[in-house]
Length: 426
Image 1 (tube, helix red, strand yellow):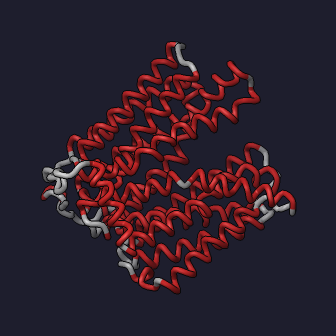
Image 2 (cartoon, rainbow, N blue to C red; image 1 turned 120 degrees about the horizontal axis):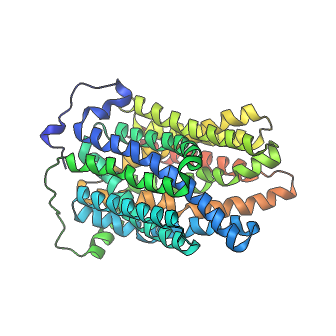
Image 3 (tube, rainbow, N blue to C red; image 1 turned 90 degrees about the horizontal axis):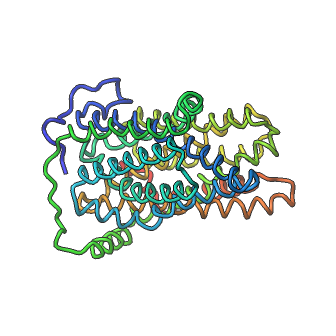
C-alpha cells in the first residue's frame, strides 16, 4: 500500500541517518514510540522489582530467581502461540486500527496494574495474569506494527525506518531502567506503572493523526486459517524468504543467546561485582544503539544483503573474541561489536523480507520473523545452558559463545558459497 499524499517526501531532516523522518506519518508514529518505549522499559524494570518483593514476602528470597523466570516465560508464551495467527489477521484487516486497539489495550492494562499496586491489593497471581494479557496484546501488536511501517514510508526508506525504530528501542532500553530506578524512590512502583500507562497517549495521539488510504483486504473471502496456510506456502516456495528465515534462526539460537550467559561471564570470568555487571550490561545497549544508528545512516548506500552478511560475520567474530577475553575493557568493546552486529543483521533480514513479500502477505511474513526471533529464544537458552555445563568440565564457562560464534560464521560462509546472490540483494 502506498503512502497517502500528505506523506510525500519533504527535504530530509537530519541528513541520511534520519531520512525516514521526512515522511509526516512516520514522524508521528516514531515520536510516539520514542515516549512509549521509555515507559515500557520503565515498567519492565518496576515489574521485576514488584515480583521480587511479592515473592520474597510470600515464599522467601531463595525463590525470587525462579519466579522471575517463570513470570517472564509465561508472558512470552502468547507470543509463541499467537504471533503467526496475528500476522494473518494483520493482512486481513486495517493495520492502523489494529495497532490503535493493541496500544489502547496495553495502556488500560498498565493503568489497572498501577491501581492494584497503589491500593495495596496487588498479589503475585495478578502479575502473572497481567503478563499473560500483555503477552497476548503484544502477540497481535508486533507483526502488525512492524508490517505497518512500509505503509508509512514506502519501500525506498523502509530499512532506514526499521533502523530508526531499532535505535529508539535500544535507546529506551538504556534510558528506561535508569529513569525507573530513580523515579521508584519518588513515586514508588505503582507510580511507574501509571506513568507507563500515560505514555501510551503519545502513541495513540500520533496514530489518530496518521492518514493513509483506506485498507482493502484482497483475500477477505478466505478464512483466517487459509490465509495462514497461504503464508507458509509462500515462504516455503520463495528461496530468498526461506534462506533469510533460516539465517535468522541461526543468529537467534547461536548469536543472541549470548545474553543468557552474561551474568556468569561477569562473575566467573571477569570477577565483577553488581556495579561492574551493570556497566557491562550498559555496553551491550550502547553497542545495539550504535549499530542501529549506523544502519540508519548507511541505509540505501549499500546492498542490504551485503550489510546482512558483513554484520553477521562481525558479530560472530566478536562473539568468539568475547568468549576468550579476560580483560574488562576488551570484553566491553567486543560486547558492543556483538550487539551492534546482531542488530544490523536482524534489521536487514526484517527489511529484506518485507521488501521481497507482496503487500498482501507482508503481515504474515513479518510474523514469521517475529516468531523465530521470539520463539527460538528458549532454544538458545537451552543450548547455552547445556554447552555451558560441558564447558565447566574444561574450565571454560564461555564455551557456548565460542561455539555459537563459530556456528554463525560457518552458516554465513556456507550461504556465501551456495547462495552468492544474497550479498547482492538491494
